[in-house]
Length: 98
Length: 122
Length: 119
Image (cartoon, rainbow over all chains, first blue to last red; front, side, top):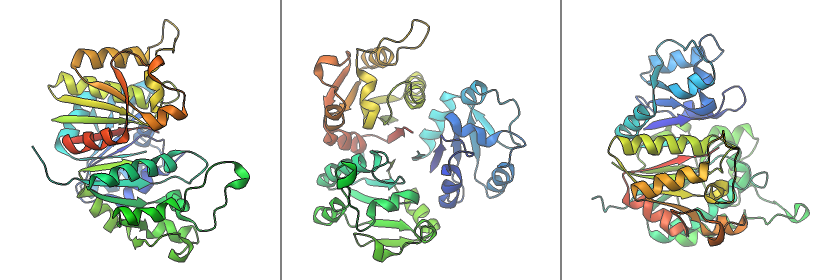
């Protein structure tokens, strides 16, 4: 199941809540303000790396990354555009955390 | 074409009254309940507060709806799950809630989520 | 894949409507079918034609209207949510309709995906 997160992790616990419910292999996609989670060097880096280690692929929506001036993204995070978002939705049922 | 019954999960994550999401979410659930799909409700985080006993909204001028959750049983919506950690960290127990729920660990709820056709957060 | 979209926020206050639009556009471009967009909560205000944003900003309602007409789907505003917020047939933009939550249930049942966008 694909989980999408659209809230900044600094302001809102949606990301850390979602992580508690993630199942092995579930991908997570950061969109809108959610993309601040994957900026390289922030305090969520360790959590992102532990998810990747547990085989939870991490994606971020590139147009949202670009819109926010995020130039460096944590290692292992994959970028998708809206077409890539559609592909992920085709592969998985979706759980849009709001 | 998939004509099987769909598994639809509603996730309540916000406190009542401060915003309309839980109330309108409940209105959606009551309509969906008439369609005989496999519905479940999950209460995570502040969503649990919607089920708190002794809510009296007369002073704020907003219609209360905690009792409406009791009506779900009459629509055969019996799958009400509460995240154990969310309940405990709020200092609440099942006895504080207006309806019977099943308290579950996040990993169990997460497993149920992956079985769903549709998940709607309110 | 057949897709239903549930949009729970109005335009401008939040990016949800923009993301839903971009997603719908991309899905259509890839040959998928957008069956319907259902508006709930403040989302119903996405289809009032009374909005008049500045020339250099996107017109969210007009954009949804055009995408819906061109691709043969409807943008559906929940009647109960619309009544609360003063949305009725008089203010609806082309390509949108007011309907009930039963329609959302049908959309959930008949599509491969029902995707939520909101706050």
